[in-house]
Image (tube, rainbow, N blue to C red; front, side, top):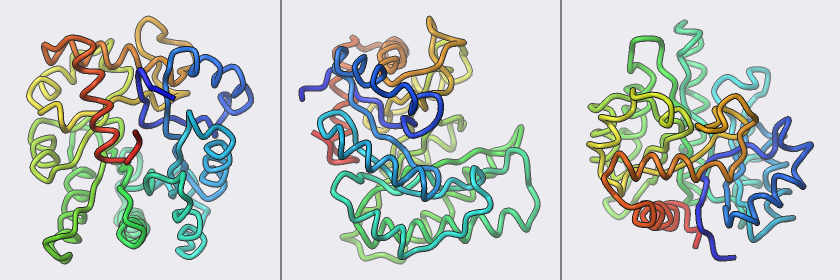
Length: 268
């Protein structure tokens, strides 16, 4: 299928999208929109793969354990490794660190241990990371810790090694964005950029090669759909806003986004 747009991060494997997936997929097909269905634990990772197998022209998958969506799950490396080898899996995650509600040292240690295992998994299977980093209020702490960990792994690898990462639902400041870009990584933006000016300066200052578009559907629908259940085809509004902020035509921005998807995730 020839894509017009691509949403690099959505959750067709979660309620309410999963229950209404036939209609969601039909609307995506009509608009020429593909997406990556992102796993947040073992069960949703398996569902993401199943959906990608059933809809090979529209969907791809990630497998991973979110830092705090399912705190009861014990990360089992071999079980995730089996899923990660699937040809429709294009990234590991979403994984990372989330300090928004809990900054206890115990939580941070536990999250870091699980995150490191998923970095090692990404290295073993040679696939990029879909990063979830959510800092505590008024801070960039989770981003700094994630970057410190990622950079330590890169420093241990041979010069020929290239670990690719995307920071999903990016809310970092200019210094964090610059650090991500210097490493050759990307950050993706969602619906909030269409109704908040908080992201404008960072988007304007970041090279287009380091920017991607997503929805995080079913969450955070963009204007003019704010307040409704978000769907992947709504990524069109996110791309329009990125184009506006970057001083590009929508077509130029759309092609740049598709090029970034191909480079990072290997999706044509």
